[in-house]
Length: 275
Image (cartoon, rainbow, N blue to C red; front, side, top):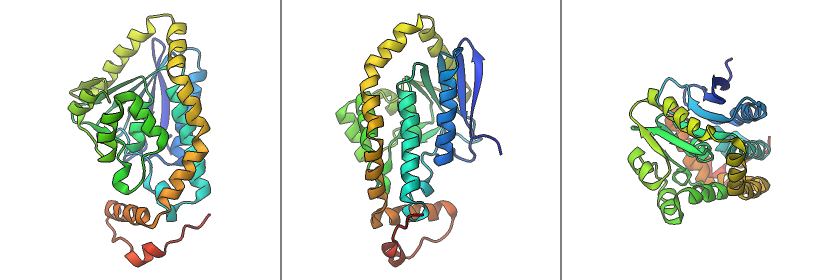
């Protein structure tokens, strides 16, 4: 089986991390493990000064976000959820505070976990048809606390409230207007050249100034975020264990699979068992 996440050097100190888990780059525990390991390898490579994240899917999707089976309490366990949350938080905080310059080249839809990954990057470029947001509220799941802070630090309190509380997935013009992305391109094939050009603009300067300044800007929040991973995991587990959230996710999963949802009585009776 091909790796879901891969790293390629393209020259000039730049590497590309490609996300290629068909059909939609659903982000399960194994995906986050691969992403973390791949990014750690990039950080350890002295030749690399910048990383661009891109999707290699056949369809126009950056990633569909966290795998719903990982958030559907009857389909997982408290231990697995918490392991995944520690893993994804470690990956995101490493990307957010990395010595490497980072860019997200976003092709198409980018909800939830994909938006979280993109927000951790220094630069975001999206296709004209793209959309992005943290839309967990639509499933009855609170947007994780530190993800709320991450978006607030990017676009400000009021704009963040408008997007998060409405479970909004703004289209590319609105994303550019509110500052969730830095550039919009017309075609998917324009994404990588745009990100490379931006990256080269940063890398023409001595790296120490960039790295240290980024550390001043991001280091404190990254440390607080990582130290709060277990607390946040508990909050997420409590939220997804609620019968109403289970029912909402069950409906969505049934729709995606083309099967009938479980009876309401069964959903209300569902007791999450540790596996």
